[in-house]
Length: 124
Image (cartoon, rainbow, N blue to C red; front, side, top):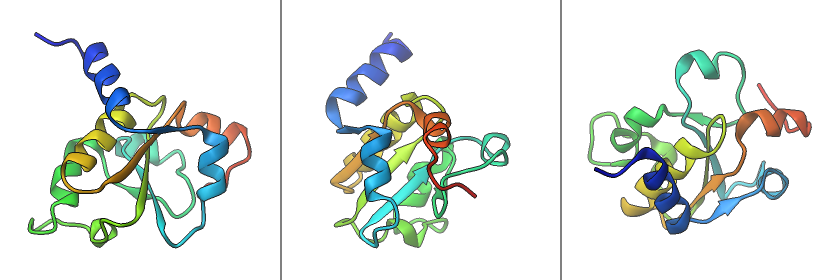
């Protein structure tokens, strides 16, 4: 059996990670979508301004444009997608999944939403 730690390490090796500082430089660009993969009780405490809130457990259904629950935010595979969570683990797994589903520029933001807030990133 593969441990969660091993799966997250594998995901981080498979997709690019991006620091909060670098993610902040991308924020607000039309060709970049931020995706919050935390659960609803977490996102109720705030999220990155303009981010799509898609819990990790429903990501595949949102990304697959043939699924009834597909989200238009994922319709353009040429965009950059920055996934984030509370600390980076779920973001890495989500970015790996998105990449495997055709979103080639899927990135995982390191250190999560807390660091974004601490550094004065825009929130809602």
